[in-house]
Amino acid sequence: MRRVQVYRNGILAGILTGEDCKHYVFRYDDSYFANSDMPAISLTLPKSQQEYKSKFLFPFFFNMLSEGVNKKLQCKQLRIDLEDNFGLLGATAMYDTIGAITIKPLSK
Image (cartoon, rainbow, N blue to C red):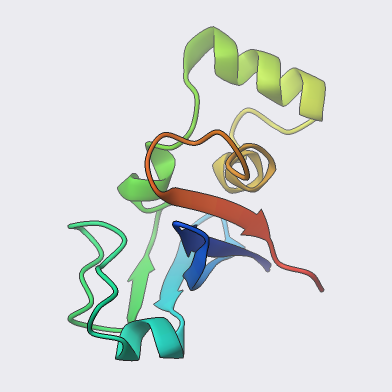
């Protein structure tokens, strides 16, 4: 099981967990979820419920990944399997992302 922290504008919004390649869970942080001033991180993950489950990496997070030649180059340099989207997300979405969302590996 792998986990990453999801930040919105530098504020912890939740935890994304990859239980295996077919089970993913996004859970809003308790304080973020309870704060009505904080918006949902995406339209597909509204704050109407605190936890979401999926059999594939949520499209919102998948769309943060590079494609094509850039993805191949990143995977080769970082020694990450091309099919390991969760690993690539955790390794590349910490800085310079488009938009307000950043991903940081969760300390064990």
